[in-house]
Image (tube, rainbow, N blue to C red; front, side, top):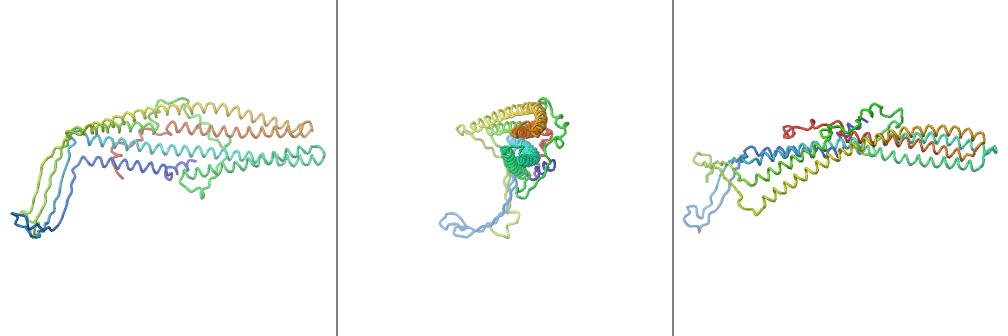
Length: 423
């Protein structure tokens, strides 16, 4: 299973999509940070134009005039009111949230794979039980036919033995369908076509079950560090920070924008004069832009940002509450299933002892074969119930590990510099 879990990280398409979103968020941070620095652009052009002959007081009237020009522009906006820094802050928080989303996707897909894997092992164990039971039923049918031929058993005993055999064969076929569906689900999780994927697993019984120490290592109560261990909580918290930064960006829009710009180049009407010193031109100076009246437009943007912040806070609180609830539910389920598993094992042992006694009584002619059939059905039902309880126990263990964050912690979140680099 460990090898399959590793393949989820590299081949699962849900994980790949989350990784792409994280890369996109990092690129957005780099884009926001670029606003800290000047923008430099250059242009070169050549064109010809004819001036109207009917224009007064122009020496070039009626002539075709060429124009050669090359220039460069530099502009820079100082971050006076924190608009750029808050935008970068929000972008970094969103990138960190995307990183947590990626870890959450990995955890979810690995948990789903583990659940399917244990379900598959449980199905294989049920198949093993049914195979053993079918062999016993075939022998019982042959024995009953011999007893009927010898005049010891009734014909109804033969009919009951045969019906029991055929019914169990039908159950076995149904399990084959379940096993195929589980293998296909695992194939999709590891990014392979189901038609080319095969998987052999050991049955889920006591000899192949996970070590008791592994289950014993799970906590018995909700850990106080849960808030630091779940990636979905970390993502929700980072989105609160992102929303708060967006409020700052919206607030900065109420202040004027200062732009420092410079332009310089060479322009001439004759190519031979183009690169000469007299052809140079330049301009340099600041500009200040301020929106005096927008009829509540900026206020509406700010109010929307504040509402988005309140929404993110509510989402964070709900995520935390759900996380604690999930841990409590799975802890309770594990304890209940532990007791249920022990009781079911006792039931299986008791049913097997009863079957041995009923078999002896039938061979001695004290009871009919119907009594044997009823007891055999009880044994098989108890055995399959025990396997299903173990499957539920494994599923609850996986769910608890997922609810606890799967070993992840907020210390694994990328820092500000890490999310600012584009690979």
